Image 1 (tube, one colour):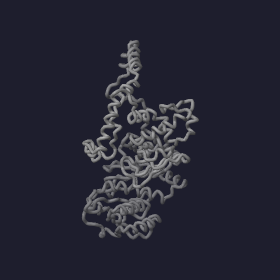
Image 2 (cartoon, rainbow, N blue to C red):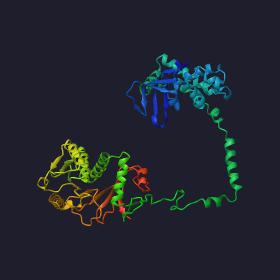
Image 3 (cartoon, one colour):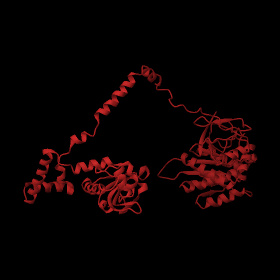
Image 4 (cartoon, rainbow, N blue to C red):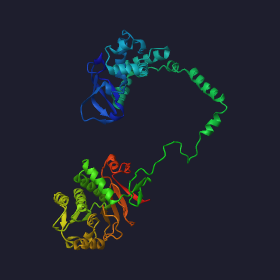
Length: 477
């Protein structure tokens, strides 16, 4: 019985993820419960493979597209099914015999078609093989036989048939000349039951005198919220010691600042749990480079130029990590790093990686561009050594940045300094903001990936304010 379905053109729906496949049935395997299509199409596009095989578990729905070939196969299957227990002559399944039919000689896909698409099978059979009823059907059969005779004798119908074949291919069939039994199909629609249901609904509404009052009570104005949600908690981060200044996100969530000592305890706890300094450097470099790429102009004719001003400390290593990622994204990066005698160990390793990108390096201000650049990233200052700003290399770099008139992005600047040597347009804080002084600089916050329980270990009640982003803007609360 499985071989009878080979050659049928079917459409198989495999769910929202896999979509719809169409093609000609090439094989049906009862043992493995699979069906194969040759020359398949996937969502209307020709598949690159000549054949696709489907399992019964993947098939949600199966429809026949070639009515002529399928109807003949359905007729033979229904003729055989009349002798099977649990299947009526009309092709409908008896619920009491479901178990016996599931083990019949039908593949699982055809069982699904016969069981769950019985109406489709009946309609297809009625369209292609209507029983003779009255003179109209007999007249259609007589006309069909006359046309066949005319074609054999080379009459005028032959030319019409050739035109049909030329325009529509071989799909035309004389069986389509038979009339459709509209009265029989209309009898399947129970009008009395439908009108009775409609009348019953109107009667029930008439018996409810307060129906209009209830409907009026449930109506809402255009500015009313019909969804009852939980109240929004805007203070989701609590700190044991405040830094003296509070910020808020675009959605209104409050982000308090923390003192530098508490911030260092948080980073030390994260390092104990495996969030090492190298991993934090990489996170800061990726987030800062993503932010810098959004700040640089999108010019297809020339690469944007970014100058990094870095010192021999941890903040300088963070800037060099950012420069490495920018250089990997086709940005012309110039690193200003004097030849220091003593440098943080992370600076040396980051410089080694940066040099592999082909980025430029300047040991003095004289090697920096004299014309304005697209962006300056400031990593000159350090939290532990505020006296560095009094040294000549720091002052000369700050003077160059202020004269270049390029926008400045400061990464992790120290807090508590009213006067900055380099005026920044943007400031990037890490994890939680420090109590930065009130300036014109816009503050952004970078997600370091510290787990919630690590915050709790140092007494901070933490609920992430980042949402789907890794860098968010902060506003003065």
